[in-house]
Image (cartoon, rainbow over all chains, first blue to last red; front, side, top):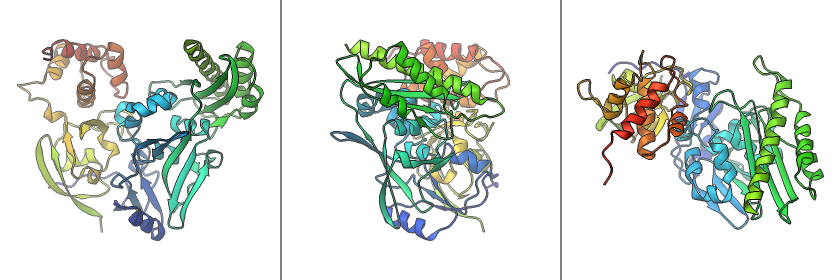
Length: 294
Length: 160
């Protein structure tokens, strides 16, 4: 047998088959990386951007994937594949915005392995699934050798590529509270090529009273700052009003005021402008869906 | 000392058992250890699509999976499609419609479309363009590839 070439730096590979085994590994090993779907970590290993001493593969772990619908929330196992979320009737019924967002997550060949948990732990600023978790004020269930804890979305997003997960912890599942029946959504993003990370994007949820008055509103902007940004002030201000041109403009203006990232390809000005455009498009889509329901 | 594991998997219907270093990715294993060099490596970070193969029925990037993770898996590579003198319908359509020039992206294009057409037997032209949007071709401008996929669908026997 001829030698295969190798790209990643040497590591010791572990593939735990139970939570006890996983927590033991997390308790006693140092410089570890958890491998979920591998659609971000594998490139980083191949390019030696990361060089862990121990790689803990979650793909043989039982019970970490699945979708469970309860009365007022939906729980998604961290190892649930993006392709399975995309094809799930439950997700289609209860979180249609997620199906829409998943169309933009990589390509079908990467969604077949990529997971929601991996995406939420890697936390690329332009990633769609973490943005939806921010939009829904999701709760993150995590565990480790010191026990289990819950982290709210407000605390989950610490910084650029930085979640609240400690080095010896693992994300088990994500809980998204469901919005009332009749809620409509909008999702819009702009990327230079299909499947690329977005330069800017926005997701909105609108709960209505009397068909056209905003009862509750959530707006998230992603790809613009180091983490997804909720426009909480404007969300509060618009409750009780009609989602008309003036309201949409006010929300778009709020998006323009986000302190935006800048890089050699995309200036912060351009990002802010696209943020406003995507917020406007997402809100218009939510209005259109409400009109179709009426 | 390198970390190795013994893995057993089926590739194109044939069982293989091998000792692999755990840090070797699946594409390098298929090419280097099994000599299946039909699977091409372009970018090795999941963007170009050249290394796309089918693992347990789903199209994946073989550069973004470790060989050790394929233990127990059923794998299909471009070598499973047809032979030089007996091309698969999709391969034949690629040839007829000039869907390749240098051929570097072709194995990934074929395996992406193979997986996609199994799951979506009657796609629109837009669906096909979306399906190959994760496969980069620098020669053809994609038009011939889309035409080949459409021709392969049209040439199929109607299902009973």
